[in-house]
Length: 277
Length: 303
Image (tube, rainbow over all chains, first blue to last red; front, side):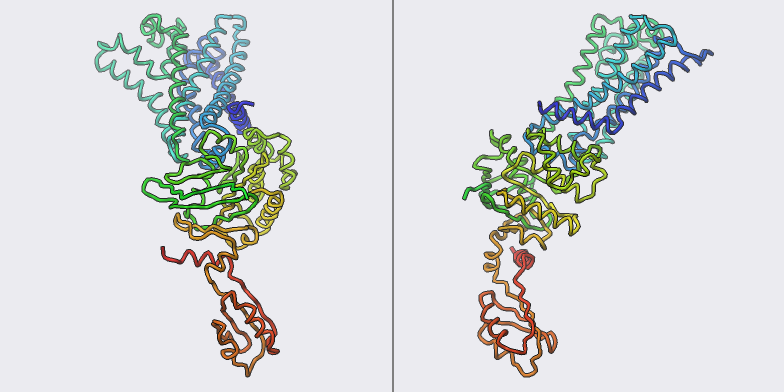
């Protein structure tokens, strides 16, 4: 069997054994069900709201949660093996460093993909049954896109965690750096964008701001999922952003997420090859 | 005899720190070499160089006549087994799963995992998670891992550190079996008692330098460390000074009934004849210089 696949399989099995897959799946499912059930309570209605409304609130919450889970899952991938001594051992085996790293990434990516599909998938099925949207295929397309991009977003942050894990020498430091990454991409970046708009009273940025958002993978995810819905456009003020031309269709945006995965992963491979063991 | 490892005038620098300074050691097929030294003497660095994980700053290393960093590296790696000093395996996986993972990575036959688990007495715990294993069991799992693919060369870094006496003795029993099968073994240790009867030659490292290398007999001769004799008996009228003149013996009376002698190795039989001829002597204990005293001797020489 191919070396990369051997490593990936072991990593995935470790994730199952650690109950990562189960924990994340349950977390996602409860979140989706909770949002669907209580989401409309602000307007005085208790009960399942439609799947399309749920996706919008789910996407907003996923932006906070998925990067955090992905970073938590993978921050110790390399530095952890280094600390327990297995990295030194593995490097005496007939395998290349990049094979080890890519294999481990694939394992973690598999854990993320499985949890996202299982967690959100089961929840969506339940909601659709309750609200009678089971045969609305447009809706399923939108939800499929949500699950796909949520998985991609997870992979982006797993790849970033790998860069951290490869560069630092201590596990605790890897955790710290990961938390900073989360703060930057999830909170600070958007605050800076917003601040800029407020300070200039919206006079600048109308043309280049959308492109700036591509520098943050969480915003790319937001653009794909929120701009896709008519209701969300008006609600979230993303309307004129998504009008900015052909660039902002889901396929191109998904491709940009892919770039956001490949770039950090390549940096991780490069740095791993020069890491001192 | 074939050289398995050939280390020629190798130095390794980490920034300004000289971890190894001009080391030359050869290891021949079928022998067990003990790499002895204090913590930080360069034992692990030497192993990493042999394994091709790091590159020598100067000098030349050959493994089965090939460079461990050359194009044959992957082939060489299938022929060697390594047990690192501190390794804790994936605690959530079972012993069998851990061994199967390493087995697949080494491209060895999966049948070997069962054989090795049996051989090292882990078969009964094979399907338990590694986190439930004792230190001794973990170390045996580590050895099982090193033995995957029937390696021609084994590198064991402090394999008995932290093991209790029974586990240590079990470990050496396993090693003796491997030696019978002709495996070449390099074993590093800073725990000296107990290792001497298991090694053919010892290489003593100190502060990155090779202080001595040779068989125990060779080292004993080279260090000229004295033999110690403990003599017991009743000798109210004997003048030992006079009896033992000309034999380069130092002695001291521990009390009226016990005598401690220090003598050069080559005088052993002469002294024994004199002592055994005296009817007042009831018991003689002969203590050859131990590996520990040889080690201490070399580490005390100011460099």
